[in-house]
Amino acid sequence: MLWLFYPETLLLLLPALILAGYASYKVKVTYAKYLQVPTRHRITAAQAAEEILARAGVTGVRIERTSRPLGDHYDPRTKTLRLSAPGSPSVAAVGVAAHEAGHAIQHAQGYAPLALRSAVVPVASFGSQLAFPLFFIGLLFRADFLLNAGIILFSAAVLFIVITLPVEFNASRRAVAALKGSGLVTQEELGAVKEVLTAAALTYVAAAAMAIMQLLSMLLLANRRR
Ligand SMILES: [Zn+2]
Image (cartoon, rainbow, N blue to C red; front, side, top):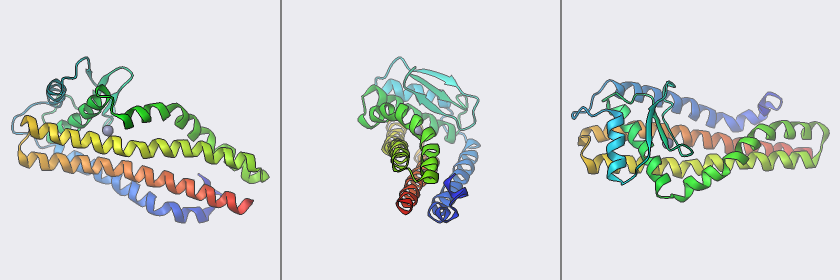
């Protein structure tokens, strides 16, 4: 929101904003396209997730439906995998379910970046809420302490978003390997799954670019005020 008061920072954010817009469009279009394409074996998304978890020896994970479109996620606190289309036999739904199962396997195996991300969550959500108000007051009153506090708090949020990248890439790699190894999808369908997961990964890359550019504009504004 800083760019509302300091329009020149918009120049820094603009490429990331464009990337974010493109990524969000791309993931919606790709997902919608492959939601219409059933896998040859006609297994549902929930069945695919169950099969992948069973093959990895992961037990005790519940699979539920979420009403949020594209709101698919794995919740490590309750060991719950929530899918937006658990009953769909489509390439898109199966691919996303495999990705979420990848997160459940990361959790079960104690994959370090996931554990680190979970540890940073409280600081990051607190930080992202408080960072801008503090920083803004710091700019108005030329208060170094508040400027620094804002920057440090926002850095925690940036750290969270950056750690998310290896976690997401790794879950997609696991999904592709599991689908390939289990023969749940054909070679051609695997290509489509990769397309969906790459589009989803791009949204995380865009979010990281945006956060880094926001941090950069905070540093520039703070330097000018000092
Ligand atoms: Zn994910």
